[in-house]
Length: 216
Image (cartoon, helix red, strand yellow):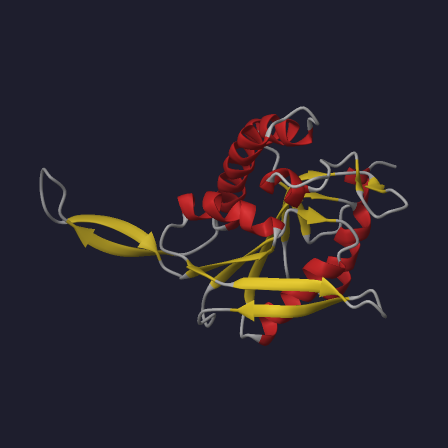
């Protein structure tokens, strides 16, 4: 049974040739920091476009350089970007390329030394009422961190939430489906599983370290 056979209904792989291309760049251990950041930014743009494809469009009348009275449309719902520190920040620029008028919130998580469960050490959100909130978390491994991040978004008033990931795997996808069955997860790649240290296989290494040029 492959990872694709174990996808919960809440998970959707964005199957686009450009996603496959740039995800391969991220996976390649030879990829240097500059190219890595560029590939992350490009994939994020594609994920964001998918994540807002169902948003309503409000009609608006504008004047073109040639004539007036043209009926166009603008997004009829506000959007909020919520990267999970620290690796999620690496997806923020790509998301803002697509949704330049979005408000931005942040979620900071760390593991409790006794329970080993993720706990929030920092969160700051704009008004989430009526907004589509895109939670940016590149790696969905066990799912505990992303599920906790969504907990915090919901506690802050978020209701319409979509999570964007670079790679996921069955344990994390199942955790999200169980804890947040109302929250879709869009991913560039769905991998086969975890190693004994809970790293995704085949994965792409530690994305935070590779994005920010720290040892990994």
